[in-house]
Image 1 (tube, helix red, strand yellow):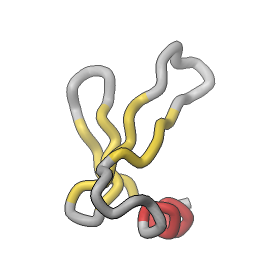
Image 2 (tube, helix red, strand yellow; image 1 turned 180 degrees about the vertical axis):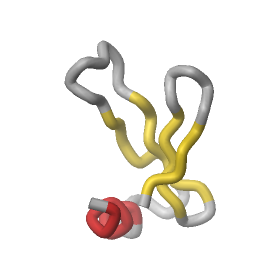
Image 3 (tube, rainbow, N blue to C red; image 1 turned 180 degrees about the horizontal axis):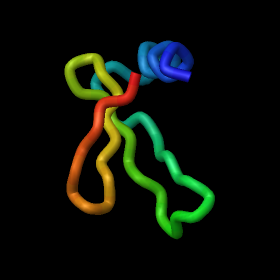
Image 4 (cartoon, rainbow, N blue to C red; image 1 turned 45 degrees about the horizontal axis):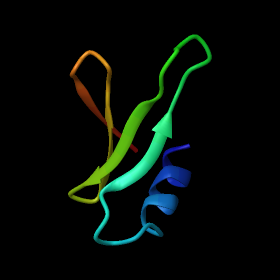
Length: 53
């Protein structure tokens, strides 16, 4: 999965940090995915962030 995320992140618009959303089945709202310093980062609803891939 990490390879797929990295591959997709490399093909986004270079000046746009927006990457997409992730949502688990039990969650009501999605979490924002963005790219910072070449890494995909998820902004969690509780204010925390995590690096994917």
